[in-house]
Length: 252
Image (cartoon, rainbow, N blue to C red):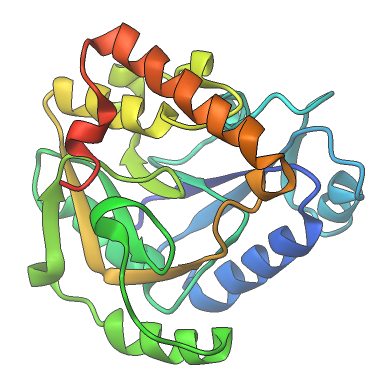
C-alpha cells in the first residue's frame, strides 16, 4: 500500500477535553511512517480555548465565528485538506492500534471502493460492535486484538455512519461536499453515502478497525426534545430530496 497522505478533519465545539484525548490517541496509535497524516481541527466558535490550544501545539485549525454545525465545519476542513485520502472524524472518538492502517487498506483493497468506516461500541446499524468492557483501558486491549489486519473482515455495506469516514480524494472531487441543508447535523452522512454509491463506488465496513466512540457528545448538551425535532426534520429533508426513507438502509 502506497504512503498516501490522509487529511484527518475534526469538527469540534466546546469539546477541548475530548479533542485532546482524540489527538493524543491518534498520535499514539498511528504510525506516521506507514500512514502519514495531517490534522485539521475545525472549531465552531468554541469558548473553551480550543484555537489557542491548537496554536500552541502547532496543530492546523480553521476558526469559525460561530457554531455552524457538523456538515459546514466538515466542508470548511475539506477545502483546505491536502491529502489523497480524506477523513471526517468526530471529536469524541478514541483511536486504537492499526485503526488508520486497516481503514486505508480497506479503501485500497479493490478499485471500486470509495469509502470505509470502522466498527465501534456506539453506533446505529451494522457498525455497532457488542464487546463488553468496563473501562477505556479494557476497550483498548480488546481493540488491540480485534484490529489485526484481516481483509476477510471487511464487507460491503450500504451506509457508513459519519463518526469516522475515510474516502478517496477522487470521490470528494466527483461527489462534492456534504449537503449543508442537514445542518447542524443528522442524516448528512446517509446523504453522502447514498451519493457516493450513486456515483458508482462501494462502501466498506472494516471489522478489523474497532474504535471507541463516546457517543452523541455534541448533541447531549441539547434538550432531548429539541434533538428529536431536529432528527425528524432532517429525516423529512432526506425523504423530500431522495423520495426514500433513510431507515430502509440503516441496518444494511
